[in-house]
Length: 115
Length: 114
Image (cartoon, rainbow over all chains, first blue to last red; front, side):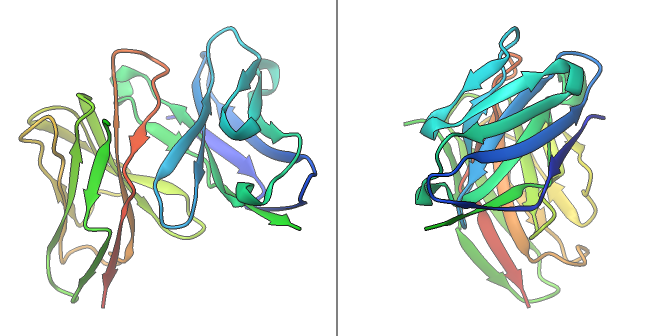
């Protein structure tokens, strides 16, 4: 089974500052990778997904993620944080069909944005 | 618009009672999933179903049961055997046709058992 590690359960940034959320995965084959955002008492909303061959993936709300196969990483960034970015963020890897197409999630990183 | 509907949003039960959480999707997705979310523990897979009338246990299936009689519906029953049922429950579905299709999530049901 695959695993996903998100470094840092909480991140605090100032409004306008860079947001960097780290995600490392374990996979020996090209993975299906995703970033989701969750606002309080809501479901998960897709931010972006990895597309084979791309190294930089753009998502919604100004977020993007860089895929680095050599480092098995898929870190999420946003150049300038906004108050509305305060939420919890999850990195996930999708298993293949034989394993049920399941998504395995990292533990999540809660982002606090300071004015 | 297509999506996943979970109901109710909040559910309260007494200890020892079984309770069923509803999940309906109109996305024509074959596969459906139930996750449990606890503070600081991310999402953990309870059960999943890739096709009607078939389902598999996830990582934390003990104390839960499911059925998949229709493609659109995947209800989850939290039984009295579940030792710590209070949590936020999320239902999801996915298209299995395309490999990098994302999971689509409902808005969750918060279950409180006292």
